[in-house]
Image: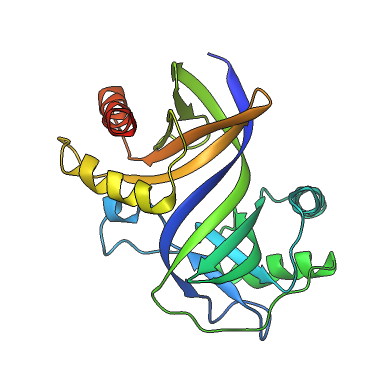
Length: 230
């Protein structure tokens, strides 16, 4: 099965907090929670950040973030995954760099310094606690197409992507998600919406996160959404 590398965007709704320690002084750093955490128990020790956002004063291009992250990885023998992101709180928008691949929380400050050395201008510190936001992330996806319109992440075994027949706004997506979860045998999964850029156009997709998900469940979720979108 051939692996495809696709460019796309994911939109997720999260309850986020700011990082208070292990960062450059007076800078704005957001900790994005692990979407898998409820599968592993409330009392699991968390020693590894899953996704960190360095909030910047000004927007930065995806191209620049990719180029700088590659340079940092090569120079310091790291395996960081940098992406362009936008955080929306009500009508306010924050620009940032989403970074994955940081091994420990105490390493965040040093990683942040590497980006600062590449002339990134970080926003001043603000405190957020249990704040609901929308996060839009531009990134690459490595996927295997297991059936037509159904993709399995090549890098994350818990992640699937399913194609949708048309665009859904955020409110419609939330409404349909509630309806689907009320009419399905297994509701213990995380879901987000997004797009793949393919064939000179856009493919609307949903991202499903569930450890050890069966293909039957993935196909059922896809079928339920498609029925409601027609």
